[in-house]
Length: 345
Ligand SMILES: Cc1ncc(COP(=O)(O)O)c(C=O)c1O
Ligand SMILES: C[C@@H](O)[C@H](N)C(=O)O
Image 1 (cartoon, rainbow, N blue to C red):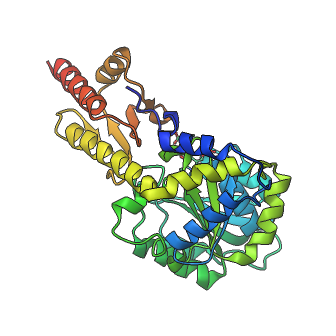
Image 2: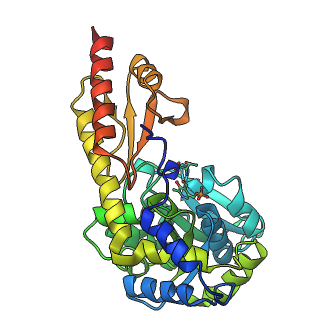
Image 3: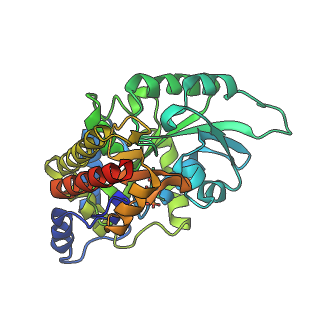
């Protein structure tokens, strides 16, 4: 049973069927096809505003290209110290911006706080020796499996506005956050100040596609050039867009996220009841961080359960996904219970 990441799953059958269905006749290339046009219309409908949509291959590309469009080479990008853009993109944001500096902030549960942006958003402005505050990036759901509430997103947005900062959301797991909160996609993005969203699909059932959704269309022309020169303008864009169309069709994206989150809650609730097990964070989406005695961790690994030991610590990251089975969750819980009891004996 594999709880390493939602990246380890296959693609949803409906996504694969859509690829086969798209594999007919010739269509215009480089995003000029009818499927890509339908995806833009669909996302504009979902977000209740006229937005521009740019499919790319990976979440790192979505983040780095969006931030490059929002940040000059001499700029500062404020982000959380555990954020994917800061930790897991091998310097892509720094590379694609031409050298902008990621300024890492703290914050409980992987969430930055508006007060930090208020306090630091103007620091060094006009001082030639200093990087110039330019943009803010938040992750929704965060790398610690928590979720920004609408008022938290809006408070950061207000601070960005006061300081003239651009505002980006890494939404690799946006669907998982959305289904947790009883708010609209618009409320959780542009109405709260977000100007560019990396809209995730790969982890939640697509084969390999993410979309940069620009709510501020003035950035579209530059983003398009940056996407091309980064090698992310697919000639057969229909095959990325077909995945997104299937992903959005009939709210498949929401059903997949609800299932992943429900499996995470089942797993977290079960772990919380086990003596010797300690949850590190609130489980608000599909990621669980739990501390277990080393003997139990080694036992779970020995029994074939797959997960990441996080940052080498004794705590584990467990990730559920659109196709996680109840039986897998219950098997993990039964093994953990048995190993913890043996460890305590
Ligand atoms: C929070 C977050 N953002 C972005 C990404 C994008 O990653 P990738 O470039 O691997 O698609 C990931 C990958 O898992 C992620 O966890
Ligand atoms: C790089 C790794 O963290 C990946 N983003 C994941 O969440 O599994």
